[in-house]
Length: 264
Image: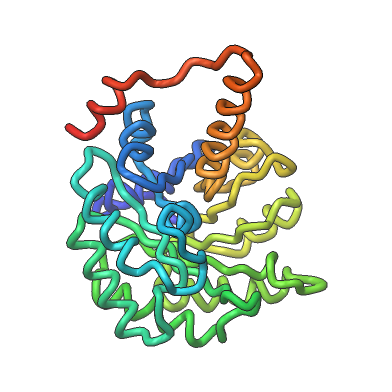
C-alpha cells in the first residue's frame, strides 16, 4: 500500500496505518450510529441489510435507494466519519450511480461501498462495475470508493483467480480500496494483500482470523457488516424470553441515555 500523503482525506488515512486496521462497525439507524461513535469509533459504516430489514425491504435488490440516502442525510451531520453501503449503486447505469454518490457526499458521507454481486447470486460484468467506480471517482474525487467483489459468495469452485482479476480492474478504474467479503483463509488473504496496491477490507466472521491476525496479514480495514444488526435482533428476542422466564436481564442503556442520542 502507498503511504499516506498530504492530500489524503482523514477517512482514507485511517486505511494507511500498518498494523492498525480500521475496525469499521456498521449502523442501521441514528441511535446505533451515535452509540458506536460514543463508544470511541471515529468512523461508522452503514449496513445495507439493516437499512433494508428495518424498512421491510429486501437487501441487495436495489430497493432501498431512498432509505439509504435518507439515513445518510441524518448521519452525515454527526461527529464521526460516515461510509455508506450503497449495494451496487441501485443501478447499472454509471451516470446514475455517480449521481447517487454526489447525493451521498452532499449529505456528509466520506466513503461508499459498491458491490458487484447481484440479487440472483451472480456477479455483474467486471466492465460494468469498473465503469461505476470510474464514474463515481470522476464525479466526487474525494469520496473513498471501496470496491467490493462477491466472488467468494457466488458459488465459484475456485474464486481466487476471478477475485484477483476483478480487484485489478477496480483498482485501474480508480478504487481507493477493495473489499472481499467471505475471504477468510489466511494464506489467501495474504496473497490478495500482496497483489493489490490499495487497502484491503475484510469482513470479520467468527470462524475467520481475529483482528490481530488480520492486522499481521496486512489487512487495512475490517468491517462488521450486518453482524451488529443481527446481534441486536438476537438480543431483543433473548431479552423478551428472559423476562418471560423470570430470568435477569443484562445491563442496557437507560431511557434518558437513548433519548440524548437525538441531540447528537
